[in-house]
Image: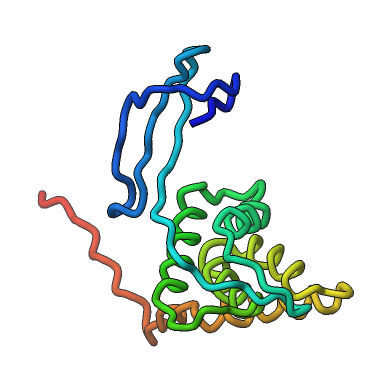
Length: 176
């Protein structure tokens, strides 16, 4: 493997670990020339569906492109990289389970939005503004209003107030 620091092609593997239920292998490597260490990941090369773009073009599914678009939506938010990686892994697993060899970019975007809505609502709106190609502030506001309405539906109603207040405990009286 080529060293990302000096470009030398020889290295040694310092450590190997299986990651996330055997989905990948993480290897720590050390360059034999500059002695710097770096990490590589090995994934099984799967045949994932092609993504059909809005203009009809077809592209192979790109895990990194999906990950970077989600990271961009979550930028400066309190969403951890692990949470983003979990979203990407879940979407990728769903694509593996499908029998079709193609998925529209619209359907893929819906999967991302479904996850982002649960993960972080600001990231959801950011992603939606690009994905749904908002033309003006009204479309943006409609999306935010939809989020607020859904938030109200999922909130549990406040506990019902009882007709009479709870009885107060009697004060202790000292015996003489």
